[in-house]
Image (cartoon, rainbow, N blue to C red; front, side, top):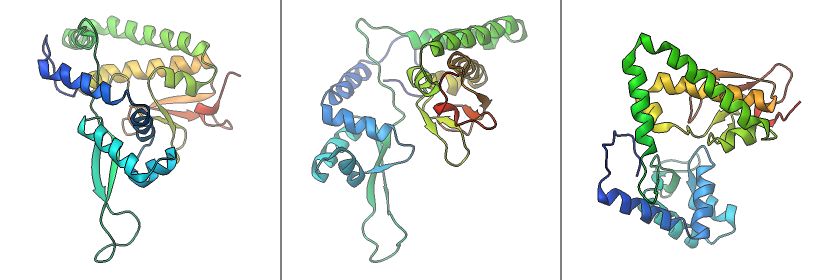
Amino acid sequence: MADDEPHGPAREPGERAGDLAALAALEDPTRRALYELVSARPGSTSRDDAAAALGLSRSTAAFHLDRLAREGLLAVEFRRLGERTGPGSGRPAKLYRRAPREVSVSVPERRYELAGELLALAVEEAGPPAAPVRAALRRVARETGRAGGAGAGSLDAALAAAGYEPRADEEGGGTVMGNCPFHRLARRHTALVCELNRELVEGLAEGTEAACTVRTDPGAGGCCVRVLPAAGEQPAGDAGPS
């Protein structure tokens, strides 16, 4: 299990067992479809909405959603839907959204996240003398993004392949990200990882030849990057190669 707390060289035995149980829960195609449905939405999803979206009975949707919640893959909240409040407004609805928990299992055990943590920490602790290293990181991130975007077909496809989960931002315009592929590192090494994110997304945009502007915006969504369309263009996520 990957959370937002630092990890030592080895995980507790129970963590690995919990990860395996969570992955086993997703083996069922209905549960996997429900998890993907909830994960793709920026807000919370009710049992009724989930059932209607996948053509399930409400009881079936509730059963599988609760199983995902028990495994820590979904978070639960209770909230009244609609404008009515007070007596007669009905019971609060049970709503689901993707939990922040990350699940990762490898056989044999691998700790690539720890390697990233150590490298980021070393760069930060080096201070000003590490400036050439940070510049190299930005350059390599952009080059990697450019190469990844070249065959993607569209910026949305390139962002999705990189793990960003691009979503149209109806309020602020453009595209925001539903996920940061480097979430745990970003929580502890924010400035360094935000530099990496921006350069990687800039590279993806260049590789797909999308007419857009990439900005650092910590409040944009699940990631610190926002993509805005160039003047007179469609939203960046819809712009394919020119």
